[in-house]
Image (tube, rainbow over all chains, first blue to last red):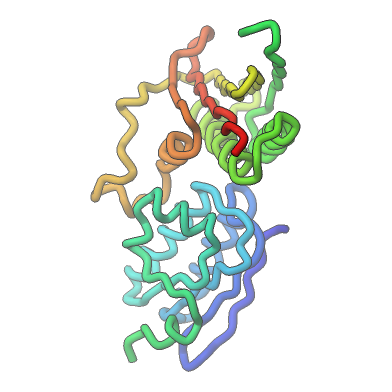
Length: 115
Length: 143
């Protein structure tokens, strides 16, 4: 399944439902563009819902990190929601689980943003 | 290599599409060999990362250069070699992606993942000078 991202707005927070693969040559570049676009629009509170991500490689992990730092450098926050076991394992191996703010339900992710 | 070894060699172009192709071939071989779901995922991703390295860092996507993927199925284990035609590299010189100063870098995690997912991992200088990655996955004993 190829990469697809659909954004929705809830109380000033952008929730992006991501499906498919985030890999070199597929989702990575699209994810980068999407984050860049959100920065241009001033959308600085972002939740990436990765519940339907079927595959992610080191390039995809790198793009998540890059998105995280880009948003942070703009004064915003990027959080992760609904990690699959495979994505969770990759974040553990790469020690990034401690870097990202990870949530298992949308309510908790939405509530974690500062007003 | 024993008389029971089955061997397959694939020559890949130095293009990004080769990454998916190499992963797909390897996962099929691993499936035919009897590796389970989780191991197939780990083997496939390791080959993916190895071929990304070979295509982008080794051969720098130079269409004149090739990547040589070799799969050897011994009884009880799969040995994978990925050889590029670049300048080669020394494993000890590769920055540790888990170091505090590298944690937020956007690249450099491929070798870490190959090491984590395979039973053995090594990098040597190939016979023609490029880097040769050797990845080994042993088949788990039936439960």
